[in-house]
Length: 452
Image (spheres, rainbow, N blue to C red):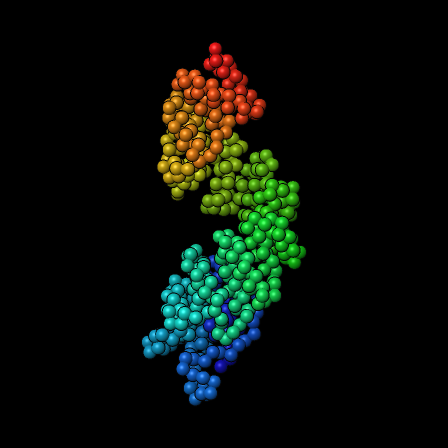
């Protein structure tokens, strides 16, 4: 029987001969991995209990089944595997094949227990650890790391450096955000086995970016884009790096050039809006985000960005409408409640704002913005003792600033605690440095009155 290469159609993993065959599109869309290389066909491993000297006398009982799998005749393969496994329930190769039949048809939940059984039957089976790791990674299951680490420490059967390298790349991609150093080490291991590909260069840039190594990230992004100039992932990655560094003059032409080719790309539009907003061009940013919101009305991140931009541009009605829309789905989201509360403050609905901010600290006691909002609302409602308590809670999580010092001063002043009020007015004036002229005038005026 001939065994051809069966390459997983994810841009990441090469499935090993016999063990790994072409995967189904449903799973592939979930796996955001780097590009794959091709490997040469390898002879099939012998079935359990056979050896090179007697394989002609004992034909491979799984050969016909694997021919069916190779031909994508999955129904026939599943039926024959079920019969075979009823007599050989601990055959790790057959258990893997049974899992693969489900995997290849886009049934990862059905494939998972078969891969687990294969691992239980043979803990050193590289292929099942890798296949299970990919399924768990696609689900966001933290167990993916253990399975992929196990795969990197095992050998494919038959030996295959390319497949082993793909396990390292899978681990690198998985750890990209959570553990950039371990991701880098995994990618280095992969590159010891196979040559660097453009996808590896991109992954290098992403790992460096996640690790905060901006100079390495920029060099790798630029090197990648020289080879793949039309890659949206490369363009948006480099633009993200520039935006994080506040290099808007570098980011904007990069994004605008890419938008001419892909005017409706959500990431590019979001980046352009962020650039415009950071440059104080709120009206232009709102226009871009409004267009993006029309393209993706169900995208919560886009809706939130548009709401924030509307808020900053002063369109409180539109902003609050969007915040309320988002809160309907997640009523206890602290960030959305903070924003809604700030709009209520702007509208001078202080009692309502106070109730909203108290909901925030009930969910997240360390929310500095919410404690600030509570203190300000208490001040407007003349609840000065409550205001001081809120400011004390805030000080547990963040240092004082001119605004909180002024609020403390006025609260003590209204409570007729003259010395404390004078002390905080002086602290406020020292911190304000001429940036708050109206409040500084009031502080100096009150200091004169308090020290008579």
